[in-house]
Amino acid sequence: MLESELENITEPLYKIFTLGRFDVQKDNHSLVMESTGSKKIWELYKFMLTHRDQSFSTDGLMNTLWISEEYSDPKSTLRRQMFRLREILKEDQCLECDKTLIFANGQYIWNKNLVLLIDADAFEKSAKQGDQLKEKFPEKSLECYMEAIELYKGDYMADSIDQHWIYPMRNYYRRLYLKTVINTIEVLENQNLFHEMMTVCQKAIKIDVYEETFHLNYLEALLKLNRKNEAMEHYEYITSFFYREMGIKPSNAMKELYKRILKQQSLIYSENNIKEAFGNSFKAETAYYCEPEIFKSIYELERRRSERTGNSICIGVLSVSTNQGNLASKEELRMNHIKQLLLEKLRKGDTITRWNENQFLILLQGVDSKKTQEILERVIATDSQSDRILVDQVSYLAAEY
Image (cartoon, rainbow, N blue to C red; front, top):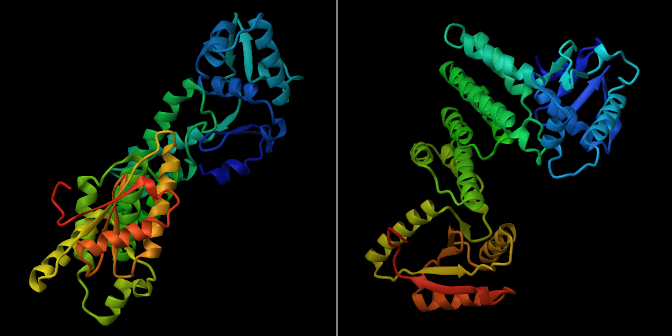
């Protein structure tokens, strides 16, 4: 059942949204929006909803939800919280049997007779139905998978970042979502539905940009659709992002895809294809920035040319010292600033790459060692923190550099 269907149900019931956002609706009115400033009350509700198949004593609830706080009378405190919750849920005038939370035999339990519609339950049901139908009825399974993907808007109870009890359930739904996306992609790929495969991957990347599997399949779909330029752009973006955010270099699977992208890009025969492949790159007004792998290729080309012409080749190295008192995000802004400085100050024919977390490599066209040093020192001198940047150079790019 899609979220639009959840929204359009008119019979009096509770509709609860937990994936990517939290909301409780009664008679199509948001109770959460009507009760701003009731964080603790809703944390109590979320806990009981998540553990609605269990019962809890007063001490059990207090020690789990508010373990760092001390109360002189925990039972009275919890009773007040329960009373406020029932007011918010508009249940203060209801019979005990019609209330969301019931107190019986010294235990608080979730009322299992309530008519509920929960997006997480609908997501799980659709995903599991898809699994059951996948082998014999792939088209029907695809409908179920697509419903599940549409329902998953993000992490379970995403706004509850400081509640340790939420993580097991959050991780469960996250793993189920990953499995569902992978199964969906498999069905789509088997049916040559590559446009749909690309769309599923795009949605999944918005949900979890750190999951490499989504990017690998997105690149695969782009290659199948012969959208090689977009594939190269995304490869450069995501490999740079992974390295910048997590210090991770391209995996073997990503490297293999990169080779296929390069191979597909090389299959160019007509003038129109050449123009399409290069796009607007001829209009560049700054130095050329590329990923380390591409920099290596450009360097190798220049090295071979220098062997024929007898001209020397030199690589400039900028090493940026870090400030131990700065946050990683601030250091990253610093590196981006230096990158922009190099792009603006150097010539169009010069090539720049960010070699690692704290170093840039620069290849200056037709410039010897002495001139390389002078140019880079002059460029860096315009930076307000130039004393933190060491200018050096190497005459060749060793494999382990």
